[in-house]
Image 1 (cartoon, helix red, strand yellow):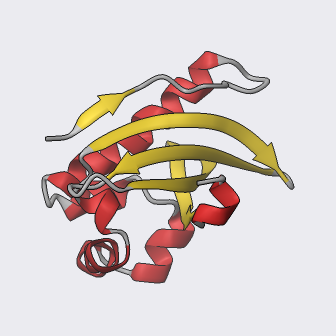
Image 2 (cartoon, one colour; image 1 turned 120 degrees about the horizontal axis):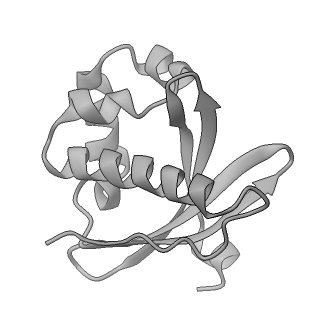
Length: 130
């Protein structure tokens, strides 16, 4: 069961509308992954990421193999939205089916088509203070 909690902890300088739009993009992509709808999930990726993978199938395979906690999360919630070194990052906290908690940082960019995911970094436990 996937539970979504759309409550960003900090919206940053541009307010809750930006944080809400970013959370919606991430949530929608994760929901598409959960439904194995890799075409829809691929639509939320930035042009750079789309170019790297070339197809929804390759993108989906990478997520299934490299980020299983994102492919099939048990729970999802949002932490801080922050700017670091000129880039915008959304902290996402997911738990997998075994109950393990994973922290991920989603790099977000704004395009003509709206917010897109430009990369995801798994935060090591020692950096997360876990």
